[in-house]
Structures are given as C-alpha cells and as structure tokens.
Length: 111
Picture: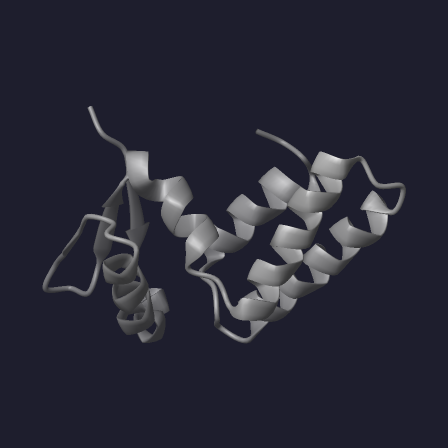
C-alpha cells in the first residue's frame, strides 16, 4: 500500500510552482479537480528536498558538506539552514510539509 503526500487547497497558490518542479525532476503525481496534488510516498523525499529556493538549497548543501567533513561550526550551519527554512516558508516558497520535513531531518536531526 502506498502512502501519499497531499498538497491541499490551502496551498493552492503554490500548486503551479510545485507541478513545474515535479515535472522538472520527473516525479510522478496525480491532480484532482479540487486542486489537490498527490505524490507517491516513495518519491516524497526527492520532492521535499529538491523543490526549494536557491538560497535554501545552498544552505542545505553547506550543511551536508559540513556534516561530511565533520566541521567544528556545524551549529552555525544548522542555524543558517533554520533561518532559511523559516524565510522560505513565511515567503510561501515552500509548503508546510517541506518545512516540517526539513526541520525534522536537518535541524532536529531526526530520521
């Protein structure tokens, strides 16, 4: 049984942007007449980490590199990413689902 990520009407203004990004990365999805878009759970991580504004992608990349290289200023990279996540969400550049996912995985370091 597949699980689905649902982007609902509350985030309707983001739907067009999301669909463009889904197509860009070859992610399979379905749309419905009420505006909902569903993405199969197996593709969820790919979507949630790829459809980001450039500044957020850069901060995420810096954090991943910092973790890989075991840098001493990892806390600064996490704080920088946290600020970018907040800004992107408030500006409407990412969905609430993306915001929650990024906080759990990279700020709180939960899997």
